[in-house]
Image 1: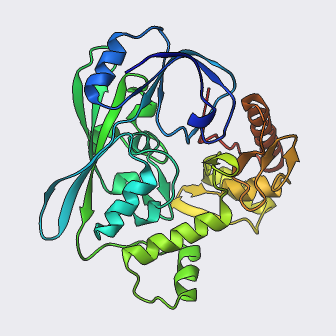
Image 2 (image 1 turned 30 degrees about the vertical axis):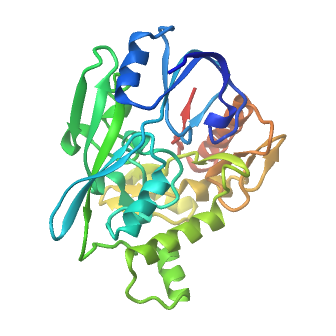
Length: 337
């Protein structure tokens, strides 16, 4: 374990933003993690996972701790279910592929989501009708101040839409070191209600899909809409889909009767942020090296040398225009630093 100074983070964030860390270390074991915390050369600590859900708007005058813990382990299993533990530094999609290859069901709709396993619970990642909390069993953590290890159950994580305890009262207090999932071994409860998935399966003449079929459908859909961060810098969906109350929703529907929406509850309605951004005229637009992707308005992109500040300015311009046009505020899903 070696602490580096003025380390470039361009290869550690999927936006490909040029930013330097005052101090940097990558840890591969829990002992190394505790050792790094005890040697902390700066009061400011920045926990770095896969770098997929963040936008850096400048250099980090902090101690950047890169969580690179690896390993996948089957803890226990019955005839119908299996408990699989993945270390925090495992790539999320590679872990999903591992589960599908073993015919462990539950994560197939979450295929190709960028990032690492350890950051997935923080955001309660989700896609195509499935959220991480649906298969989450528990996660292990290290408390930053005391170095003590603690397990969080699903109930203790207080999962909500793109939210958890780790974004609220536990923010900045714990580092997730591993996550355990409860997956099915047979009689998989598949989720294929989304139109895009149904369309893909239909095109392939698949009537009774396996979890592998569903994963392949999701991968195809995501690849058709979302740019590969290795080719075009991005962080996936930049904004959350807003959930509004009845009064706001009725006013919105009067002005935009053609808009798609999803009923969350009798008094709450989710409106696709991508539709709002496209309606505001930003889809496919480019401003210097910062832009909005041509196939998916939810995705902001770096065409090469955009700064984090330029991308953040674009995001704020989008927020302002959407609010002026529709009366709805769209909140960033990406963490901005």
